Amino acid sequence: MSPIIKRKRTTGISHRFLVVFFLTVAWLTVLAIQGQEAYGETKKVSGTSKTIARLAQTHIPVADTPVKGRLSVYHSVLSSADPDWNNARFFYIEYDESTKEWGDRGYGVITHLGGDQTFIKFVGRLISAEGTDFTGEWEGIFIGGTGKFKDIKARWLYKWKSTMAEGRMAEWKVEYF
Image (cartoon, rainbow, N blue to C red; front, side):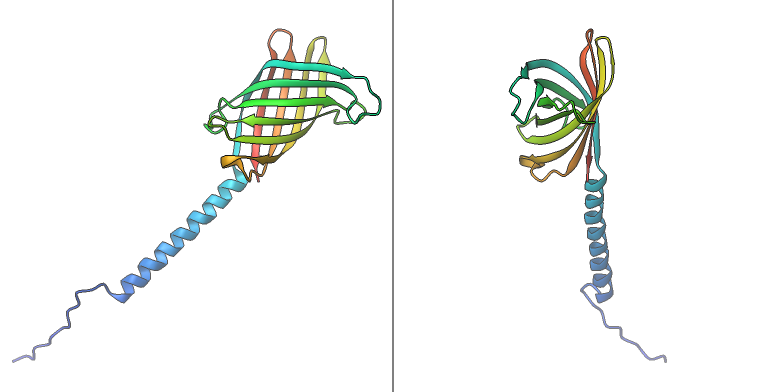
């Protein structure tokens, strides 16, 4: 007769399973956190813009003011595949410092759907002028925001073209860092 061997039956989960389970959860959590950080650093949003109104334009004749020359205020609408940026309203003030390589300087506010806002400081330059057709570009940095854009850290790139027939159209890009 062979001896009867009794095995100890456990009704709980083995320690090995628990260790593997928690290590897997920890590993997936680390990957998720790193993925979000990497996305935030490399996220790019782009689209187009159409200026719908020049709200004001004036020439500042006072010689001792920090802003000399032309001062313009514009209103544009942004279009993008990204819902956070699509149909946003872009109001900006552009002033001329024509003695510098980057002649235009300005500030802008983008009001996104839902009411959150982003604030931009930019410099720009005229690339070409042929009759009444002009092209230019801006580079800027976001200097603040509200709501979901409160701590925005991103660069603003804007390439525009202005014609008598179409007005001012632009392609823009936001590069988060």
